[in-house]
Length: 243
Length: 264
Image (cartoon, rainbow over all chains, first blue to last red; front, side):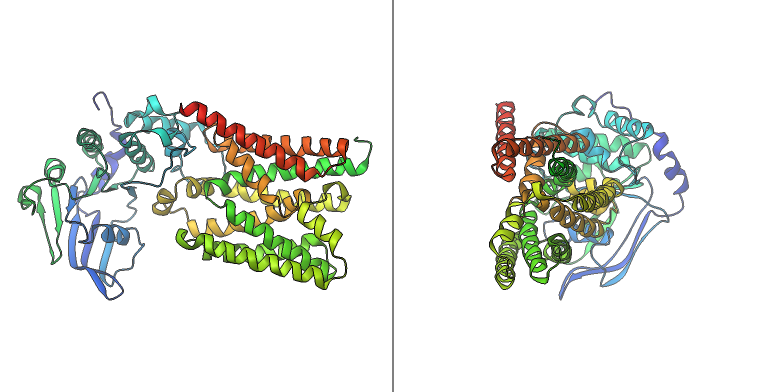
């Protein structure tokens, strides 16, 4: 990922504004499917510029929490509050992209442009797309079909698509889970460059090693509760190492 | 051939149908709705038969039935696991209804044939205007919805977390598909509708990337089929729908071969 330049101007504003206010405040949150409570009395904050890693084994409610953040699940109890005007970006673990998926990398990224009523892209919009492709090292394969891209390239395309809308808070939902080790670090190095430029990151993972390497703070979900704090205080993995 | 007014009407009508079918088809294919389109055409058949029974124009019956049912079927089949079953059940029910209405009305065989297999050569001037009106409604709808439709069709996951308003887009799109089915039924008949609504678009995606280019190619493929079909129908007196079917299937096979060649 060397030689990749991130546009710092993009995020400078959110960085300056957000010093006093938390981007996200979760207060006493309880999430449940029917009778089955997944998360109980959870409280935490994300400050601008944080790289919050959300760690925990499968089934402790990481994905449930993300669904709630996107209003796809209504809290049983408690509040989720974003600072006014916070734009969310989201990079999922995978999408259902078949091999003959017809869009090029460029067209896929451009899907996240503002939803105007004109079908065609303005010159400015085309430049925005090219710029984000350059920042994510996708320019050389911009016109290739996304369906035949490698796992790492696809993840970078998902990242670029999310970043195109200039989110203040980027949620990476197990985005590295299906990648080779080397590619995992490449992707997160890239994310870190955007974080340096002011982007706030929430990285959901069950990879303790990555969490320790990149996180500035952690939120550790377990079946019985949770802990949160600076990354140095993250307890050792229950399995004694990264998966 | 163009000295005959009915041939002129037929060419005019089929041009609009090809443009509508190519445009809508790209999204039908991207959203995996090919079989839903097939069901809608059977529902359209029942609607047209109902209209014949009531003494209305078949188009009115088709519009009524397809618009009313498209949203319902679309909602019922959102879950992938039961989509096929829902679609089969609906098809069976509506084909049954279609046969019932036809047998209840006095004029059976010939009107059934024209509903099922199309009768573009018999199209009147008033029907051409109707068809153009409906086509314009569909195209304007797609135009205004384009960015949202594109996002939700080609990246449902992304659309869902980026405030595209997926449900509203899905409902409006199903209504537009229903309209297109009713329009295209005029020329290829309700049995062969999905030839124009799915095959040109399914072929186009093997030749190019990008939504606009796919739409352009799909329209071109649809036009090739309908124009050549009309011409050959005029020469031979064989059914136009037959030629259109053969040409579109031929293009699709060529597309698959092209894809296969690229993959090697």
